[in-house]
Length: 136
Image (cartoon, rainbow, N blue to C red):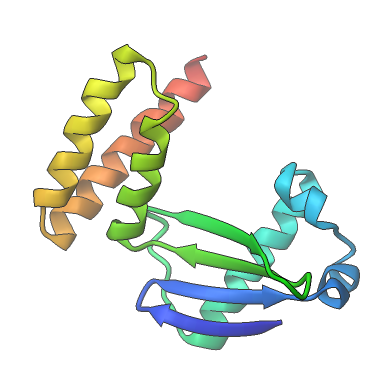
């Protein structure tokens, strides 16, 4: 696998078909979030941190997956607030009327906040989501 540091909290990993075979997974495993696919993603994120000297915060995590023309796959692991905001904006497209307003307010608050405050807001938001899932 090839690793490219894009920012302090953003690393791209290019995985070839041989890399998938080595780890015993397929792209479908990753996309379907099977146990093997999730193990692969966790290991890949760890390798990104080790090879590129990134100290993940475990706040504002996003992952973009792109199949490249040569059939290798780019995984971009990010904990950048700007990438998190982009991800939230994509979520707006599928949000119902009840969710849309609060989500737009949250995005606005993140855009106005400095880095430390934005991370605090995101950590609180993610904890609330996790708590809701456990109740539901």
